[in-house]
Every structure is written in structure tokens, then in C-alpha cells.
Length: 340
Image (cartoon, helix red, strand yellow):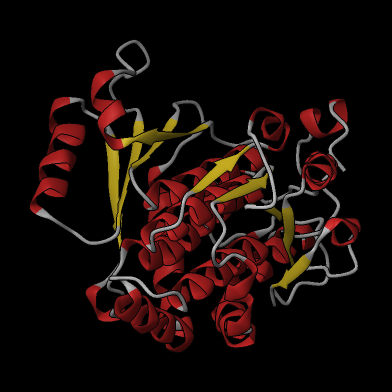
């Protein structure tokens, strides 16, 4: 069996760097957000977030963030915008780190003639999508290329949305503002913890059996990100499963020694019961990822961010373990369907 610490390719080193850079990029993004950007969405009847791939997970996160502060928000895959009535009381937020996602561009082009305001949340203000924006929200991911695993652009977009929400009057405002401050302070600890968790995951995971990543609420976004990271490296088939839905389905697919990651914001007695069922009743190889109390993060919305990084690390160290010679992604779908 190949060891986790093997020498890896330049490509995998580059992927690792865009994970590690989150030690600073999340704080850099939070500190760059203009509080006046709240006016871009204030008073709007509906907020529609769209994105593809990792950016779809960000749009799902944005749905949770804005609903938590009392806004009517939904997330959609870009082609779905044609099914939603839109007018001047609608804001469409297109999430695209590189600004080049063709489906997101097309959706924004369809939304504007209906009178909707359009915001593009991006890391590249020179990207094509910026031409379709009434307003531009720019992250500080600190990456030189969008052609490797988009770790930092994903979490910085999440941090940007969380910061916007923290500026809005709500029952959660005090907790959200506290969490935002914490996220600017704990970058080094957060990455050290995420790397440790990632290596634990890599020791657990083996190719062949499916890997179920189980959560709910905002933290389900972390499992969606984890699913995409494992699948894009094509070593293990990852599945994001809702916590309660997993209890009702998957009857045919669960075998002894299948693999599961339970992901939650904090550790609770219910988590312990759930883990006991996974390991002792279903005979799964399982690990519980939860955010350390010492991080001082009060809301599940904020806790989702370090959990997402831990799963990014898990996928990275798994591919380092089983395919350290990897030079590029396996991309049959990207080549079959023109996405950029």
C-alpha cells in the first residue's frame, strides 16, 4: 500500500497549495468586503443564487446564510432559472470563481431582460461573467490559476456571503459578527486541524467501496464539496447524503466495510448514537468530523467552512496515498459537455 507522505507530482502540489492558502485567504476576503454591498440585496423580495460545480455548493451555502437572516433565498442550477418568475424585486447572484462558467453566463443573460438585478460573486473581476453583473462581489482567494482544484475560491466565496449576512439586522447578527471575527483569527489553527483530519480520512478510505459523507443543514454543503473533491480526483466514489435521508434509503448499497464520514458543526450525544449505528450495526468504516470548540465558532454557518476544508484535505491526501503520480484530473464529463 502506498504511503501518505510519498513524493507527489507538481499538479498535486499545486492543488495542495490552494488548500493551504486558505490559512490567509479567508481572512483576506472577509477584511475586503465592503459593508455597503448589503444595499445590493436589501429590500429585495427574492434572492436567487446560481452556480455550477463547486459554485453550486456555494450557492447552496448562500441559501442557508440569507435564509438565516430572514431573506427569501433559494439556490438553483443555472438552467433552472427559466422556471422562476423574476422582476425588479429579484436579485440573481451568479457564483463563478473564474467568471467563465458558460451555464452561469447564460443564466445571467436570461435573468437581466426580466428586470432582475444581477450580482456576480467571483475571484476574477476580469472574467466574462462580470459583463453580466449589475454589481460585482470579488473574493481574495490568492490563487494564480483556476485550472486546479478550486479549494480557496470556494471557501472564500462562502466567507464573503457570510460576511454580507453578518452586516444585516437579524437575531443572529451578534453571533455571526463574532464568527466572522474568529474566522479572521484562526486561519493557522484551522488549517492545522483540517490537515490532521484529512490524513485521518485518507487512512480510513480505500478505493472500491463508496464513501458516504453524511450531514444536514449548512454542513451538508461541506459534504457536497467533499463529494466533488473525491469525485474530481477519480479515486473514490463520493456521495453526499442527508443525515435523515440516509436512515431511510441506501438499503441496497450498504455492505460491510463501506465507508462513511459524519460531518457536524459540534459534537453531540446524537452524533455519538449515529456513529455507533454506522460502525456497530451497519459495520461501516466511519469517522466523525466536527469543529473543535476552541475555534469559538457559534453558528453552523461558520462551522461549515472549516469542515469543508477538512474534506478538501481528505480528498487530497487520499489521492496522494493511492495515485501520487497523478498529472491531471480525469475529465470525461468536462470534455463531453463544454462547460467553459
